[in-house]
Amino acid sequence: MSDTDLQARLEALEIRLAHHEAAMDELTRTLLQQERLVGEQAETIRRLAAQLRAATPSLIASRDEETPPPHY
Image (tube, rainbow, N blue to C red; front, side, top):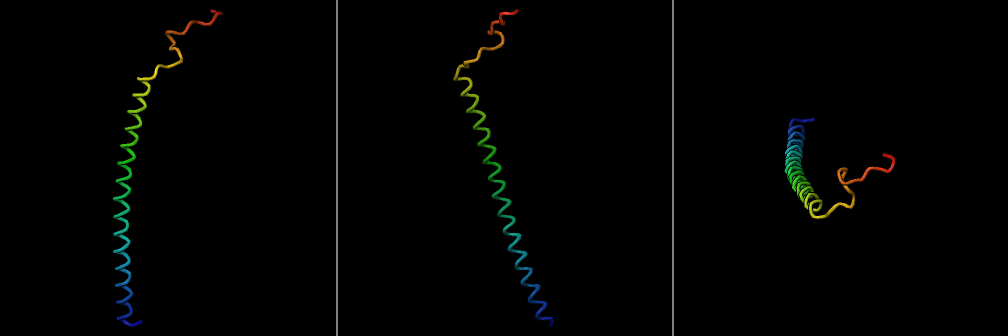
């Protein structure tokens, strides 16, 4: 191989590497955005579940309200 062929191959590899790095940076940014969004959604679900538990009375009596079984 001549020097010009090697130089051309090296430039092509550098270009591919630059594109791969740009794609990796974009994927990293997207992943961070998705992670933030999932965290926000999880917090919203926790808050809604707490509100639902507070607004809906339980059909199951607590241990304090439960009468002891007849064999006691």
